[in-house]
Image 1 (tube, rainbow, N blue to C red):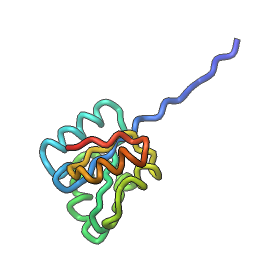
Image 2: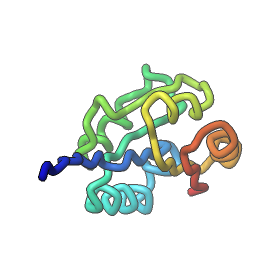
Image 3: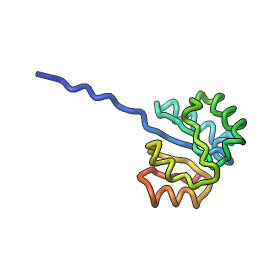
Image 4: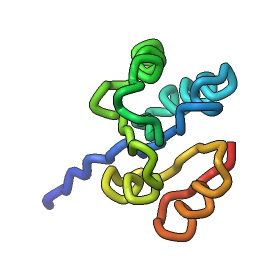
Length: 110
C-alpha cells in the first residue's frame, strides 16, 4: 500500500496598516493569527516611500519584509489575488466591499 504525503500550507491572512495593524487591537489580532500557525501579511495602500512605520511594526511582530505589500494608493483586491490571501482585515469599508465582490478572500471590517 502506498501512502500519499500532503503538505498543508498555512492560511494567508493580511492586515491593512493604518488604523488597523497600527493599533494595539490590530497587533493582538495579528499575534493571534500567527499563534494559530497562519502566515501573516501586511497589505497597505500606503506609498512605498512611507514604509518606515510599516516595517517597524512588521519587525516587532516577526512578519517577513517579503510579506509587506504597498499598493501605492491602488485598490487592494488585486493584491489579494496575486498573493493568494484567504482573509484580510481592513478599516476601510469600501476596500472590504471591493475585496468581497472581486475575490474569494474574506474581507473583514476592522
